[in-house]
Length: 339
Image 1 (cartoon, one colour):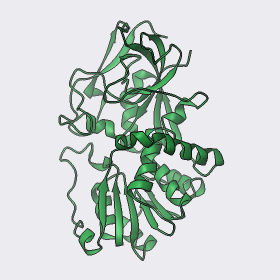
Image 2 (cartoon, helix red, strand yellow):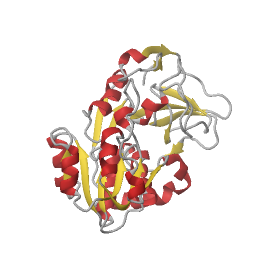
Image 3 (cartoon, one colour):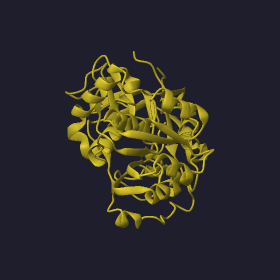
């Protein structure tokens, strides 16, 4: 335990790739919880593409992070002091506690804290049994309505959310092709995750590869990247094809914003559907999804990867990893140990 609260403060909004220059490091006294509040010490920080969206000036599904605020993120933490009846000292909790050692919570806020189930690895609750796993679950099953026999394409397929979505489609009997970058990620998708095919966007021409893998068209496309990849998938939709808009990471660090789409009219021709979603809308159903995800993990049907970096001082560079493709699976940063 440190005797100060180390924090990363957002000092500017990035115009392109997020960098260390967008933050400042500060050390301040550890705060004391007031009436109805509790103090947590962070153990693991989660790094997700949506954090880059929160750094923009305009609000999204959550309020924008303001200049001078601690950088927001999901994390797993341990309660170290409590004046709150529902949170006891020693309990592990998930919440939006940010890039810092310690945080105060009253149990509410834009990302309300929740208790971890005893006996579950905290790293799993930040990955396959956390928000990324839930996003893949509801995006593929509820929004995408995947069914046996579907020809499914998933971009960002080796990422934390894409890999879960792709494997759920496989479990449900679909033929699944993933898009990723690099031989190692391609090998993991086919040899470990069990996908039927893979497209390496770094070495293959996407439009040609899509025609080869989907001669009868794409029944369901789960999109994590947006931009030209989304446009190419729209051009290859089958009759009645569905597109699930989960993320658009290709444009998050672009100074000019997201690329426009040329092939959107194919949704009309193919009587297709394109729908976005936000995982927070499914909060009342997290329990049912986590039970099924945990069952697939336990049976070995659902594989996962965790990329664990260490040290709060390395938070900015760890954040960059998810935009450069350096991460292998879910990106986490360890900042403390359970006491």
